[in-house]
Amino acid sequence: MFEKDLTVQEMRALIDERQADLFKWLRAEGREIVEAQAHLKGGSIEQAYWHYGYAIALRDVLQLLEGGNLELTRNIESLPRTKRDGAF
Image (cartoon, rainbow, N blue to C red; front, side, top):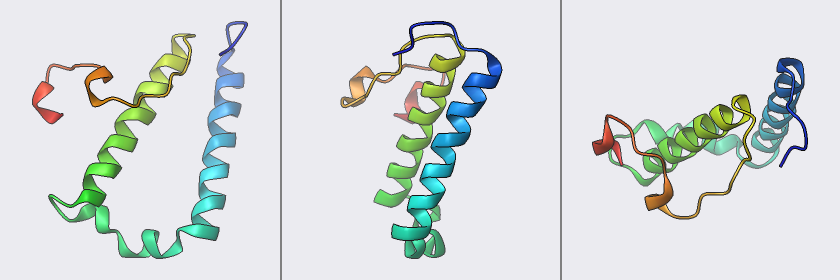
């Protein structure tokens, strides 16, 4: 995705921009989602989506820090395995 190694400042700028875009979208489209906090209900589909999104975001940040390409994950089996493998 990137043709050169990014500096920490450039990585920070990319993350800041994406975060700003997400908050803008949430204010416009997801206000009731933010207010409901349904992802906190154990075992809910909302909680599964939240954890999936958070796991992918962490993976993307690690890839960015390592200078790698950010890849879209469409298959749960392609997710990285961890010591706590039972989480997936």
